[in-house]
Image (cartoon, rainbow, N blue to C red; front, side, top):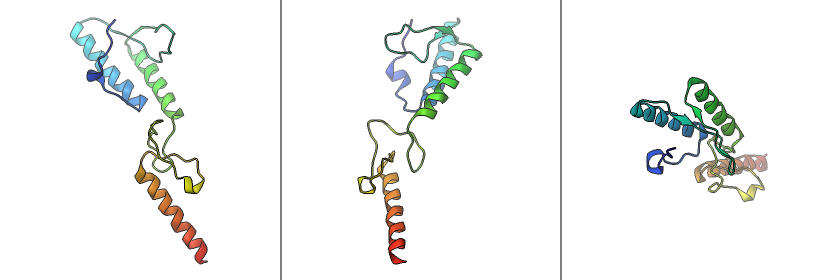
Length: 123
């Protein structure tokens, strides 16, 4: 069993990008070795990985798994990008539980909120 090195694969917030990178890497390993390579995905801590030979069917299952994870992840209230669970922005003045991926997205929503409230008070 060979584990991919961090320098070789990097870090991905988006599970779809991570799976696509992993598939590319495993396909290259298979070409270099001249033999099938086995993969595991959706590994849970404490559960032994189930290895499967990389095939079109396994690739489809991996991509479906990644898409499901992606759909369940939190997205920015403004732009829809993925939210990093450790690094996101809130607008406490709005009493909102909306999360933003960047200060820019949060500021734009806050500016719109101020504009709407300014128009409401002028009427």
